[in-house]
Length: 441
Image (cartoon, rainbow, N blue to C red; front, side, top):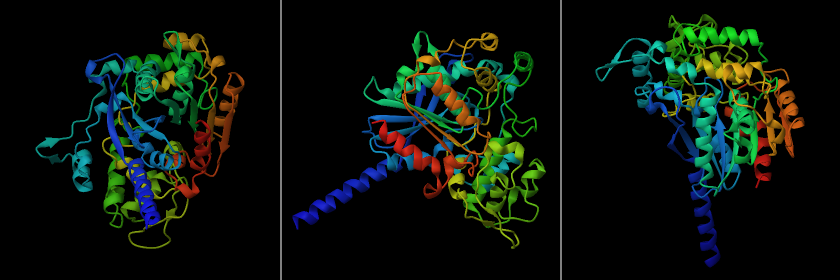
């Protein structure tokens, strides 16, 4: 009887620990002082894992990405790595998003409010005009890294916790830059116990711009819109609003005819060629077999349109279940897209590619780097996106530093977002990063 009671207690405690790990909380972190009103000196993190954890993995989203990118992989990791929290970071520019109606979870209301000029509770959607926030032209890598350092210091909890820094895509580039960055005489790597690069990095991972091209981009930025326009529609917020509306319809009304399929501003190459369901329309836009090559940064391997049906449903069976993608893109607060992404950040990350002092970094006002002294373990994962450049960049970083050990993994059957949303049983990133994180104890 006593043994049964002990077994029951163990079961209850294990279940409670797992439930705590699977939950999350949304926390504000004071940002650095930067250009613009002080109210924007603020970022947020979604925290997964037990409060008692003595280690933290901070994950930085990529190009136009948000904290929702880690809504699936964050819980996956903390369930498998004891004594660990995962902090999914949202950059300061997410403050510009009006997600009030999305937060209600009604796809029809959201569609009407964001895309059809409708009114909800007497209010109409008012997109942010870049001309009203010219100070965002100065929100580059320096601002991002100084904001991120505040997050790292909060996670360290006055030295009572160890911090591993990681990131996806451009977030991986940010991770490398942080490790080598000079914070007023304090090198970033001294704050960390490990680095995790998820299909991103520097040293040739994405691009090596010329000085002339950087000068032109900088001149264009100084007189143009401060935000990236991913869909090239003249409305930077569209990528976020379209993605979340489509994901919300797929989540709430998966088998009904796709509402967005005939919406005039949806690019034609994102629309299924036959009448499709809401879920199928989302899958068609994101799946690597049908999504345009120009949008490789948002692609997964999720399945295909079914061979028949009216409307045509989605046939799953590859790496990423659409339900996991939907959850990330509809998570509020902290969805998976940064609606208003600063152009200066992409310019600076490109300019910092070589991780040394040169005419480009001087022009952009970036700090001197010291990658040669970085001495923490590194993990890097590569998909099909860069044709091998992620791991080549990681090897260059390891070779030119004091990194004591590294784990480099490639899965060229995965798309750029698959490591974040693939089912655990099919996710090679999850299966290989977990042993790396366990060894960092």
